[in-house]
Image (cartoon, rainbow, N blue to C red):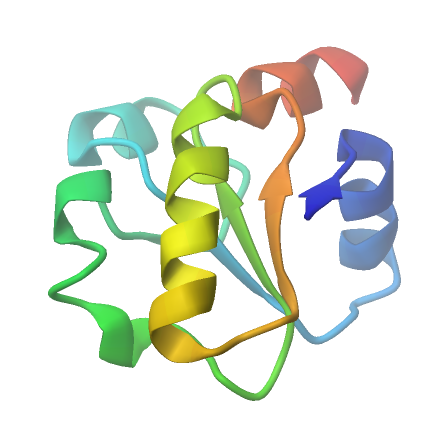
Length: 97
């Protein structure tokens, strides 16, 4: 499932309880990010215990492609339904906000 930058901004403003996971590389996350935790794409499957099973999880990357790709696999492996990918990624979020 997809979440728009506008909807994410609203969740942040409302202080909704969710987990934001940035799947970019460490150096990309350190350069700029929109919050959350950093689990690089190639470490997601060895870090499944870090992914919340009790609240919505939103994955993000630069453009939304990597986060959308990992979304389906994580959903299947963990049996989660409340998992989203940020449409357009961090780039879109920063442009729109």
